[in-house]
View 1 (cartoon, rainbow, N blue to C red):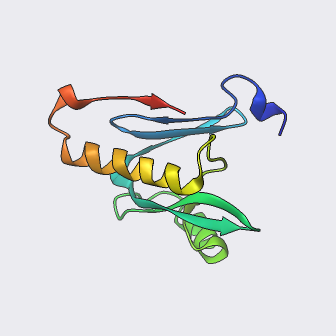
View 2: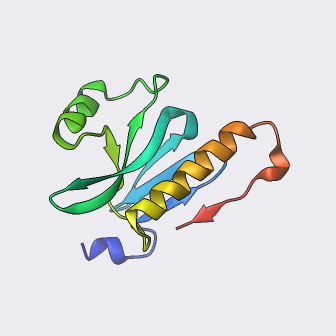
Length: 114
């Protein structure tokens, strides 16, 4: 959409807490422990990064069931932000596992805006 081309209308931010996704100026923030991991799925022939929520995430259970029935995953990213879906899924898994295994070490923090 043309609106998503406006500055800050669409982005993905990865940091030590989790990831924030923005589409059409609507932001959603998820913590790393709220997702089980990232993979690649396809909807209507379009490859995209998909994920399922962990047991700790208790929100939107009915919507997650519907999404899972339709796409095979509870959540997904609307864009790959210039990367291949597989590359972005691998990057997000790296962040998730890095920060979950190094939570106590604040000196290890890094941030990336995509």
